[in-house]
Length: 289
Image (cartoon, rainbow, N blue to C red):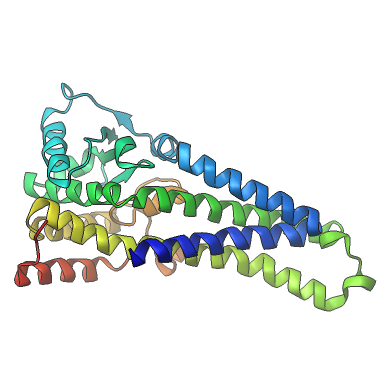
């Protein structure tokens, strides 16, 4: 319950940042326009986030005839999670990874790479699928998709503000009206707003990964297969990063992007810490559904 409240508050802050940048670009009119756009983007993310995420990842829906074992696994685990069976997709990538999307359990979808089906054994893959089903059950996919949409829009608005500053200043202010204080404030907003948006998105994603790990372990009835899978996935991701759109990277079970600023601004908690928590669950026997 508290995690849902916290995520809602963080999304509200993201929307507020969006409005602040709109105000800086166009004054009161810009603020109103930005607010309307933010509401429209939230609604768009609500209805179309799953389709966008699947399309951007190059996922292809597979039938039970094409992937019988995967479908059977998802069906059994969905029943254990007490949610409808989600649609099943495959991504043609040698890097092992997986993600879930969908605005509600009845609209859920899970996607796995061809690499993960080759690398993991059946129990480990079941652990990964249980993790993704926990995301769907907790409606994490909706919240993270909305956060990604708003954060991306804030970055876009900050770039627009940069060009507005170059070609005439923000809110129609000249140097006499705004002075250096306004100029410095605008520059700080342009630089800091996208960083703030990213930090908020990270906070939402990180907190929910721990909950999905625990929820997946309970769905499967054993935390150790997921812990083993995470070890293999982290090892593989460090050697062969996926070619994915950064806007969707937070959806995957392990961060598909490595190196550079991506390592500094992680959308996932440390995999070693996730593994340690799962093994602690096993030692304590905390796996009741």
